[in-house]
Amino acid sequence: MSLKATSVRLDDETLARIGQMAEAMDRPRAWLMAEAIKQYVAREEWFIHEVEQGVAAADANRLIDHTDLKARWEAKRAAKMD
Image 1 (spheres, rainbow, N blue to C red):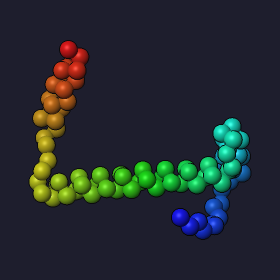
Image 2: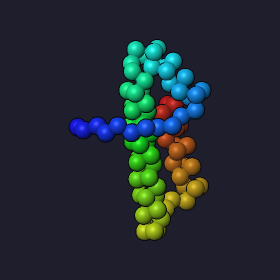
Image 3: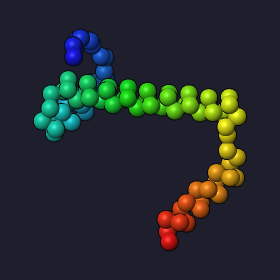
């Protein structure tokens, strides 16, 4: 994996907080920032994918009425409580 140096502009307070977290974790500040960005990107990719699936389902008229969905969840919850 190749790494390319980039710069990120952060306000002093955020940078200080990152420094404190990195110190507490015994990790370099750059590692912590890279890890945070990786997690953010993964979460946003997942969200975009899920939205696209929802739009495709709506376009294909594969929707569930709110009342039906609520009844399914309530039945599932009741079954778990037994």
